[in-house]
Image (cartoon, rainbow, N blue to C red; front, side, top):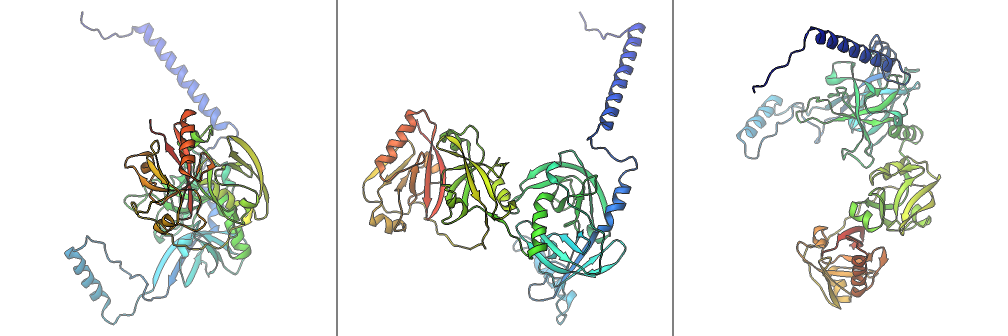
Length: 500
């Protein structure tokens, strides 16, 4: 039988129409109730005009100039071409003719945005906006201009603080960015392309973005358009408070595609307070080197979830050592703040006031424990050059033993191996002398010359001890074993899968 298209009769059509009307009415009532509900974000009836009128006077344009010199950028940049392209010589000749042989070098200039956070004239902007500027000029919406002094800057968070005289000035306050929710409205004000003050609006797209721009990345992602010249400008909530400092965009083309990033107010405020007070940034310090907790590491430590920050090394004399933290501890929370991932810990510690005694929850020896740590002050960074052994660099002596489940051969440390692998005189553990291609150790980039210091968080000093602990892990039905590796003084934990 052929299929039929069923059509409802007049009575059925009337019934369906009534049902649709009822459903539409219910949806409309629901939306109205949601918009009227307390705590729901809603657009002002008159748009954002009153909000912008109240906060825009505190947002400024920042223009900078740097004296011409060998490193100054040309007014017209040289286009980038593939090596050997004939256009390269053409444009170079054109630019040289344009400037002339005796033309003086031109100063470099840049433009950005900022906002006043104190009536006495303290202005927040991005570090990359002011750069190495010799002169900084701050201009308000009413065309008043002031020469600014650089109070201080922080490259780690890309923030800078300026000072202008002649106040009082209109200013704005920071909000509590921890209360920001994905989907909340956001209003961004800046000076894109040097056209003058401009306002855009959008929503919070995401939180906690790590774009690998610094050690404390925790960006708020917004879809309010952020273009060239918006850097350093503020993003506001509907209460007129700053929830973030506009800093970067993601764009394949260089233009806005709706993916912008702002430094959260809770990260920016302590940095600005420190710059205002000391002219530099004072941060908390724990004194540990950490790494991520993978699923394999969590399983080998009987940790219920792969979370927290695994302590790979403890700085001698630092706050962590004084609190008796040790390699192999997993930091689960710090000062009441959960450490969901490894990169969260440096930011949490840095934001903690110096000399404060805080509670730290750690995972040690298969159970959760509590310790107390007094936060220190982060010392000046030291640059150290580390040399790594090339794969296959030789030197094996002493009692060698293959550890087949891990795909390595290990040996006792001897004078010959110390010389061959350039091991420290106080080096401890067993030395890796060979790595089987494709084995578990090779997959984790272990190399000849690496020292195995611990297996299953217990020290080892001979190849038989390593083999015994590996076999014990297999007897316990472990799929991997946790190994502490020392490579030229750089300690790290590795979870090696057990073959077979």
